[in-house]
Figure 1 (cartoon, helix red, strand yellow):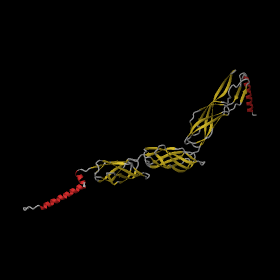
Figure 2: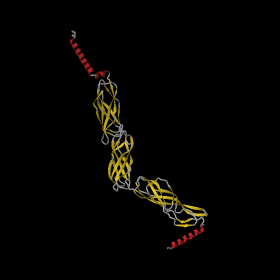
Figure 3: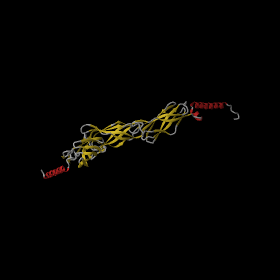
Figure 4: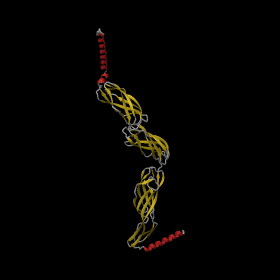
Length: 440
């Protein structure tokens, strides 16, 4: 036995003797001279979680404290509870160095006697870009312990409690995963009713290298942007890598000039050979609106029974260039189209072009305003053939008046010419047959 152990034993015997002398037998019971709570904590069940996930951790807290010295007094019950009991325990979960946020407030756990345990749930939300690895959560336990007790008189005991706090480490693991981040979205000349490409710049901000990685594009609820080519193979995708995926999409013709949502994700193979998928990230795809073409200029008029060239002017009111545009007009009774297609070339946004058509109208047509359908055929930025919405060209049919009416009627012109020739011929013969004046 060492000198320190011998001294400790002597002190303990002196304390025992004093306790036996000072505590009356009539009201005395069990007296604890030493003992404290000793709390240990563990996480029940799985202890590995994905970045960006929300999890409920069930924390198991056990009191392993013991009462090392106890004096039994004859003739009475225990005067107090063991000092190893942790009373009115409050548990608070702290993030420590873990990349997460604790959602649950501090929890009351009640009393935890020696040898007993409680299980308390806490909800946490991991950061979306949490790197994989081991971390330490901290569990703070605040409680009260019996510090001393005093026998005031037979049957009356005063207890003195003290507060104590301990911090317990909880190992916590974040899984190594591919974490998808979107750095840029580019969708040039994507207009309503057309097709185009969406270029998405993707970065792996996680701590795992994905193999056989494929970028995926999904439609969002009620979004008019619909992927038609929603898979792009990337291959190896190590941490920090940046890749650009090019997806083909179609835009509903009812889409307006705004940004619409779609979802992107990555599918990859992990170290264990299992196929995993990242969480979906919602991105915005800009649509520049609908191609707009209108007929401008003054209304066209044409005479009954005439065949004439008419000029129709078009304006591009949309946001994209109409490439190799052609105009077409559809003639219906009482009109006849002799030349119904006109090449316009490229029409830039805000630009105008004039088409020339040859149109005939029946001579029995009613004098009024008519509307003929016209449309523009063109190619978009992907060289797809597109057709504009139908438009109306206003034509006014008129009746010639006066000399115009006479000159425009071939029958009347023939009659007039014949009459003039006949009158001239008659005048000539009349003059030839008239006798000459002898005096002349």
